[in-house]
Length: 127
Image (cartoon, rainbow, N blue to C red; front, side):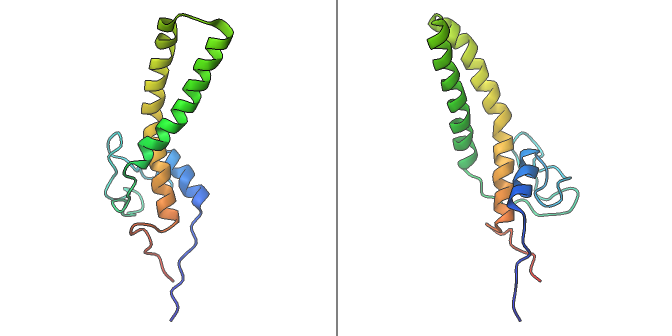
């Protein structure tokens, strides 16, 4: 008897994760606190504790935020040449708020990708 894995949409799972929703049903919450993952989805019962996001979410968050912040800093410097304290006043809060907002969304997307690719124990559905 052949075991064939049910195909899962990587794109849909990733988008559900970006919305902080269960990668399977898209309804339940992935996190119970800021970035603390729920043990199971409260809607469909999917076990989420298998996820192994580890250091990837902070790395990708920093990569994304720093690209935008450094581009903005360089553009403002070239166009207006403000004092250093003005640049710091603008870009430090932007960096902090952007990173704090983006981190759970990136982690949710990575959990969605892991679920869709059936990685780290997410591969249960066989027909």
